[in-house]
Image 1 (cartoon, rainbow, N blue to C red):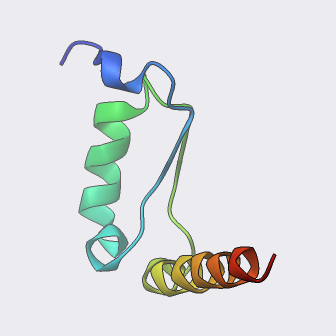
Image 2: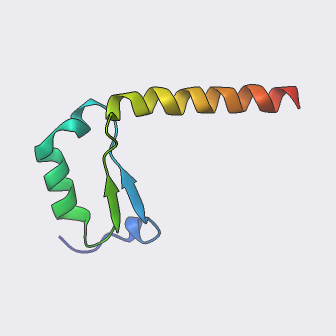
Length: 67
C-alpha cells in the first residue's frame, strides 16, 4: 500500500480497547503502518486506558470550570 498523507504528521499510534489485545491485529497494524509511524504501542492493559483517559479528561474539565 502506498504512503497515506494522513499519517504525515503522526509519530505515535496507541492501540487501546478490547480488539487491540489481539496479537493478530497488532501484527497487521505494525505490518501496514510501521514504515509510516515510528512508534506503534499497546499498553499492558488496553481496556483500562480508555477509562483512565476519561477520568483525566473529566477531571481537567472540572478543574477548568473552577478557574
